[in-house]
Image (cartoon, rainbow over all chains, first blue to last red; front, side):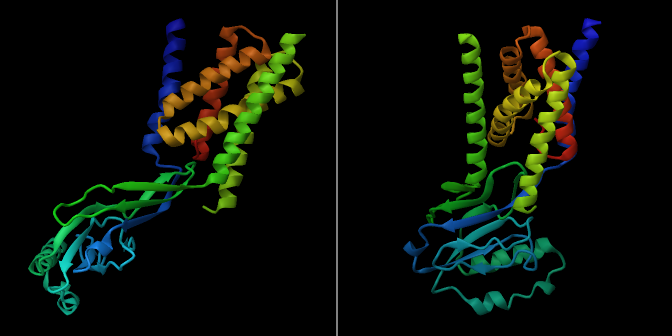
Length: 194
Length: 110
């Protein structure tokens, strides 16, 4: 009998985590920002982002002097940033790239990367996150990744990430907990004094 | 989900947890119901927000549930003045019920 009760308790404890894996509930999408902090140190270069799938879903976008990398991409895009010497940068060549010439997305993507390489483009950041979800109960409402680039290496991780939180909810949660704890301690203390 | 809608869901979840746990206390304890409701509120107002924050940072569901079960057991023992065995049993049953309820409504089950 005791064994059966223990087994039942274990099953009851483990079952919810299995369910939680099977049913993806309670997720929310948050705003993601990616910023190159030292873009102005490379005034001889034009920086572009590209999503490595095809131009329709993951277009080439020029990064402005504020260093903000566009996140206006399809969530499956694997976005990278390339630095192209200003002397070689040819906007017409990029905009005239005809995606219809290529039968598959892979070929189109490869042709586009070849085009960038012909312009002496150097990949400086890869695997940039443009899409992120967190638990519905999470207080994180926005995340910003900061990259300090260097033309000699490809960054795969941001140097710094700052999560903007819903501080009001955090404050309510902590206050509620602390107030309750104080009342509980006072109650127990008063009871003990009697 | 809109902020107001989300806040409503959180309040409903906390209120349901509080009343369900109060129901479990009432089944096991022959005490003044109003006092049991107050104790249930105090215990849940302490553990519910803390558990939400712990889960948010750790994403460790079972650890969060286990800590809630232990902390609530200690508080039940202290406030309701019952044996350790009974306190932990009440805490376990109350938390299993609310855990399943939480899963059913799709937010953190505590």
